[in-house]
Length: 518
Image (cartoon, rainbow, N blue to C red; front, top):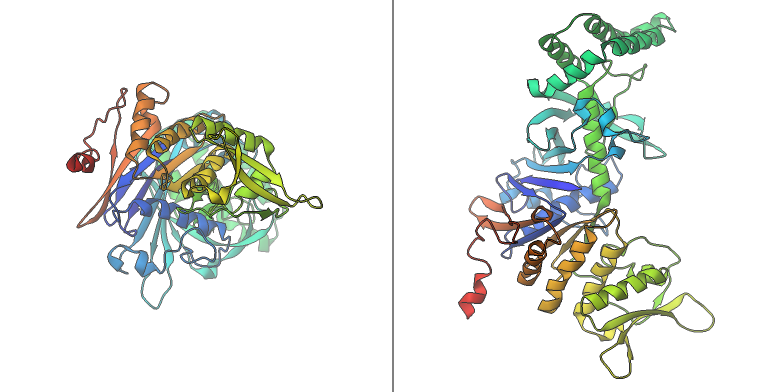
């Protein structure tokens, strides 16, 4: 789950702006204020990571058949100023699966790993017009306090190496990143000090065991190769053999962890740079925290499902592709196939069409006697005395645009669904009723999260009503208002109280246009 996004020098956003997310995030604002920029930042990271081309550009701005096309770096940077550094900080909620394979209970881990919210900041720059865009820095932040824990600097391509990654079955080339800054705040080191003090004897045994493994092959060549690791292990053995205090512990471990190296997949920290022994500086809690943050970022971007603002118009008939999709596709291309393959989903969709007050019933049927691969997606009009069967392409455009969103909300489990203006071509009452669909979807056993760019007054009124009726909580909703000023876009969160009323004043009045017209 996403808990926040911070943007600086990205498109409409100049000065750093923080966008807090909730299970349902509704983004409002005038046209060209910067609402779409929020979704585009996430989509950019997703399509870059999904390209799985770590040797290529650190940002995939113009992909073929991608999610978003952002042109060039100069077009994307705020004020088109190439001297600026673009930063995207993604705040994620860490899950047990991010901790390792098999997953380890968070309570069983050292305190440094028990952060349930971590932020990872990616900074990009283009040094000159003759040079390409590069990943300039990676920062790891405490997701709750926003305090920086560590910063890593990517190294040049000449340091590339082959590494095996836990969730990929192949070897992929990777670059390295070096730890260039590490906090010395006592609040960060004190839990680690307490943990290692309590585990002092077992840590000492583990370090001595590693030294023994290193010395099994005592040839001069191998000893020179493992020299750095051996020195590091001996330094740690000296520490854990003593009655160390917090200051000594902090000084020693901080020194050990500075300049440690991480393997990178595109912009994601993946694993420590292993040497002959498979250890880097004996142990590195900071590296492990960065790796956990990297796994969490990758998982979060994989869970992100962006829906195009305009879904693919329906056709009169379809040929089954032979695949078994688990989603509708970003533009709704796979909607016919997923309905054709899942009669239970058709039934569930019809229940929601009825609940939303849509007087149509979905019907998916094969065509012809000789092949089951030809089929139609049709609607039955229930308003007539005799039910009339109609092609989906013959009803209003709003139904065909809304249907993909309904189906994706039903089929998704634990996904982050982002969409621009789901209310387009939709009647006001139906816009409001969409709030019920969102509320139900965030209460699943594997709840979904929604990021919705919208102009719908009716949708927010329904969400307020659901809070008032205690069907959802105020913290389930994040209402973001984006405005544009001389220094770029600014995002404000407008909080709701237990009665569903706004605690914060709506900028320029709550949909004041209606009152002006009246």
